[in-house]
Image 1 (cartoon, rainbow, N blue to C red):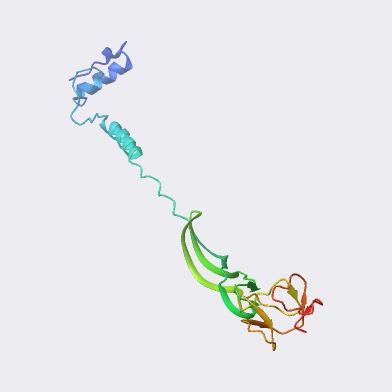
Image 2: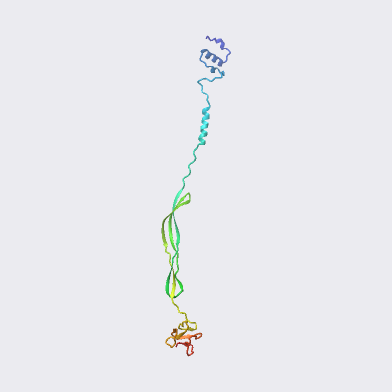
Amino acid sequence: MVWDSSLRVGLPKRLLLVAVIAAAGALPACATGEDTGTVPANTATTTQPAATASTTAVASIGEASPSPSPQPVVEQRTVTETVDIPFTEKTVQDSALAKGVTAVRTQGVPGVKTLTYEVTLTNGVQTAKKLLREVVTKAPVTKVTAIGTKEQTRCDPNYSGACVPIASDVDCAGGGGNGPAYVSGPVKVIGSDIYGLDSDHDGIGCE
């Protein structure tokens, strides 16, 4: 093809360039700027990667692993406690006391025992308690009660001085009476001489 330079006059530069390249047979149809409705085979047009990236981001957010649970706080302490030790009781016989009479000889006193524990706390709450040792820091005192065993003769209230026993009859010891009970005088008559011990009526019997 012979290019007529006269055709250049009045043509836009773009059209002029296109005409030159087309004349050489090297310009694809799309280079002319016309919309042919087809996509060249070597042109890749896709928006799928953007959508995939968005989906992947959403999935990553939805599948985030939860935060690990906090570990429990475990603490061990040594504590002491005191408890009372009950006292025991016992009774003894006492011949110095009249029969049937009781008297406390020693008052009972509780003792004290000290206990040492190892206590385990989990998150501030006691979960275990182990006894390490126990020591008697104060021994208890036993309560002692005496019970009298002494036989006591009942005396007639009409006489004083010597004890005139209460009986069906009482005579002066060493006299001629036949009893069955006797008394060694002298005795003072302070009431009625029911046994006839004051024979001379001077207020003194068994002289």
